Length: 303
Image (cartoon, rainbow, N blue to C red; front, side, top):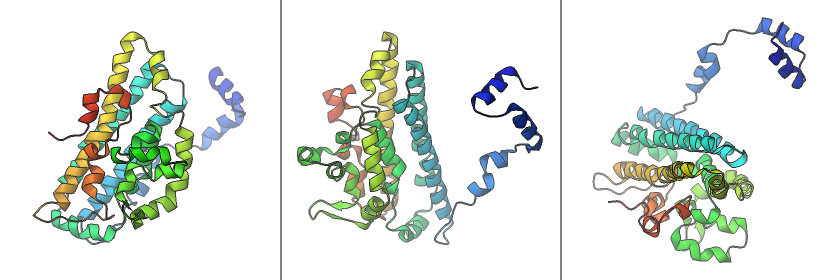
């Protein structure tokens, strides 16, 4: 006999409890390696060169994409579900910890690869670039409004942008693959847009009214007075993690490999990597209303 609550659950799902119970006879015991799919996971690395440290590079970026997926997982709940404030703060804290993991683990890249090997095998990766992580773009669109992803030097062009596609051409990530003087897009950007632009445009439209910034007032209205400070602190901490500390560790790593030993090297995607990565240049801020004018002016500046 099945416990009554389980019977009720199965019936509510349209399942026959008797057949369900019989099916348990054929279940195999669950092992760790089956549940986590260890063997397939360890066979997802395909280096393009013979350099040993290329595997370090691949595995690190695969870990990054998995952690970004955890942030997306939390954002889907924050943006689309009606959660109590305690849950909202908890999920923001989770996202902050995921971001901390990304930031702290970057030393695998900055300190864990041979300078000579990296500067050889990276040439075989062109024009691929971490710029092409669509998950990170989706996270940004789930966190804030489009205008907050336009760099300061292009905001004056926003009123002239009539369509969503035209606004997308102003977004900060275009700096990695567009020559603003000629209006021409590099291969890195053309390939990325060919694969993901339509998907990102749809995602942007879907998130327009429910992104984290747009839900901020709703969250604050739900708060008891004593909950407001922790909520705002959690939002600002996550904002700074993804938009200051995360790009800065990227920038420091790029400087290690591309600007060291007296030679300035180009990024594999051909971007102006210093401007693209530096938070003080892009001033990407998810929740600008939470900061003072002084904080906004000094956003991402290095001491």
